[in-house]
Image 1 (cartoon, rainbow, N blue to C red):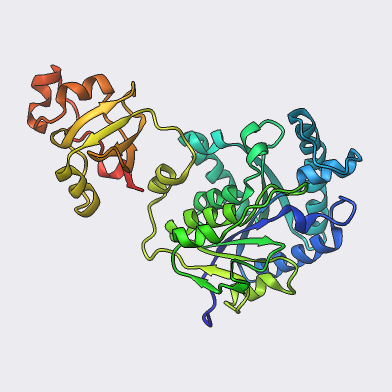
Image 2 (image 1 turned 90 degrees about the vertical axis):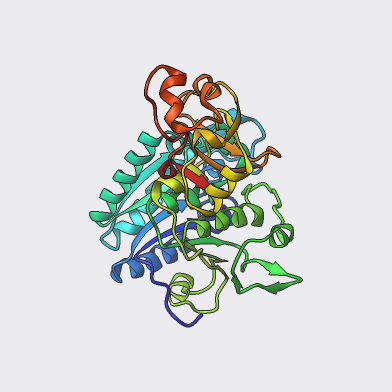
Length: 365
């Protein structure tokens, strides 16, 4: 790893333990060091988005709690109090370097609804154009599932996808991914073996672990984004990463980068509304020939999905291998499945789309 990483736009995720000083308060000296490093990146014309954990722990300190609360209302109260402390700290520290910050609190729905997803992307892009550092966090005060999962690692991968980043840096209190005590420097692909190596311990401070970090790396690298997991307390860690120095574990991106819409279809957490089953010929055409899904290749459908809904595409063995936006409702598809596209008008009584799922609205997973 001798060549610097060509990264104009960088997403940096900060783990809870890095921001937590003994006793539960926010670690101001470490945060100062982080901000100084980020300022150095912006001076090199890099655009930085910060995904920061720590709100709940900061709130615990403000409320005098030593142990992470078990009840949802207590967790939400900690997040509500702590979020103000967190953004105030960042605002002060970045301000000392002449930079401004903006706060974005997001939930799964903000990513799952396409219009909201695009609005967030436009907002972040505009902030970056004004040299403002976006500070992103899960909206733990209302996002019940995310409080249970504690998955800001996944959030950082979604944000990296959202803003078309070239590099995702996940800073934690671990040196990277270990195999038998040895640090793995470079990972070409996240394999089942590596996933078995990962352990996700849950503790009173953060709920994340190497499991969620590997999941984030898998999503980001599949979208053509380089990922580095490293110890955030290592000196000048950000500059070392950008310069491709041997620090942490570097996950290499796939050579081809999915288009923005296809990244949204593939990786944003959203519920599919039904299933379209296809025959072997259609599967081959979708996987290896870059074709759209035609009615002739459909062998069945399940669920009450409507036109425009996200559906799973499965083979004869009910194995999901693709997802896409259906041009037809389930009740329409049952009438035209297996038919030639030229017969659609006669079967439905009106002229519909030639494709059940157009290639532009389909992604292989």
